[in-house]
Length: 81
Image 1: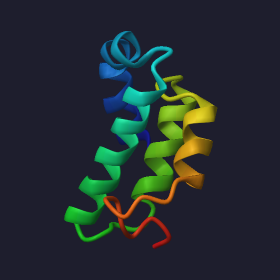
Image 2: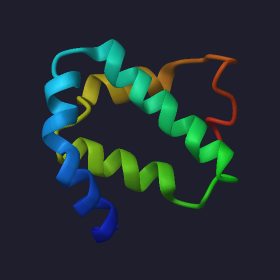
Image 3: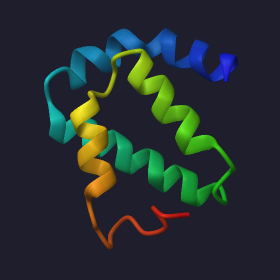
Image 4: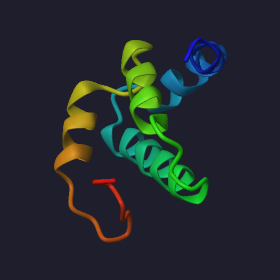
C-alpha cells in the first residue's frame, strides 16, 4: 500500500486541481477505477486500498464515496464482488 500511496501522492496535485469540488468528475474517477479493477481480474483488496488512499489524500470527497456505494448502475457491474 505504501508504494501505491507514493504513486498517488506524486499525482495528487493534478487530480485535486481537476476534481476539487466536482462530485461528477470524482464519481467518474471511481467508475474508471472500478472498470480497471474488473479488467485486471479483480485483484483482491485493490478497490479498498485505492479508495482509502484517495480519501486520505483528499482527492475524492466522502460524500462521493457514499454516493458511489449507494449507486446501482448496470454500466458498472461487479460492485458487490
